[in-house]
Image 1 (cartoon, rainbow, N blue to C red):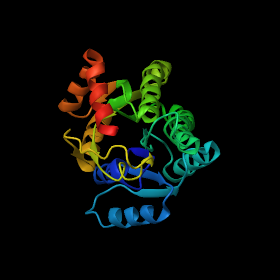
Image 2 (cartoon, rainbow, N blue to C red; image 1 turned 90 degrees about the horizontal axis):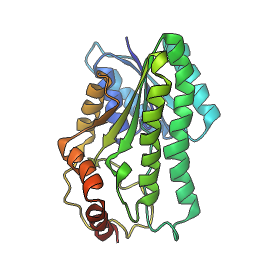
Image 3 (cartoon, rainbow, N blue to C red; image 1 turned 120 degrees about the vertical axis):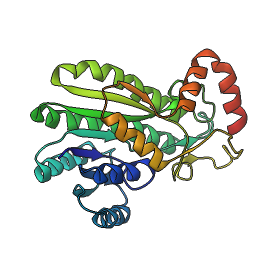
Length: 259
């Protein structure tokens, strides 16, 4: 059975992805800071109709490199190998860069950037031992967008999207594939847990949203392929293209939304 390590598994896309991979027969390691959420997820997986993969919950803050390394060793000790990493843990932030609390900006940067780097650096040695693997990095359609009042979050996604393209070449000789996942608006707790000023983003967006389960299904499909970049929906592909063709127009609309 395939062994899949998923960060940010307590809610939203990460939680839905754990369930989707377990239903498909993969052994899954799910990590998050909220232990009670992992316990609830464990109970839900245990209740799935057989056959399904085993689940190993690990309490983890991806900002802690030593803890990520320990979690990866625990996963390999349990299942004997590592085939896939889904670097999903992430956090949003809104508000003007110059006025935002540094603690909020630092938390977003350390979670969205450092957390991905720690996860990759812990996973790659184990994948090499297994003869290869697949790393899927959850990025966003805002990675190339002018994003006033969401600039720190967008910049963090620009970092991981750029990282994935270079990493794919670095790891090609090791038979380790790397996929950049561009995710659009999703119904989840992500918006409610954003750091920063609550006044921003109060205007309802008309952009279509997908469910966490739809996003997870798209990730499972991407995990079966060899593409280096996957945009989850056709609508999101249009948005990414608009960010290139008419970036000012998209940026102005974002400015009105978050102002």
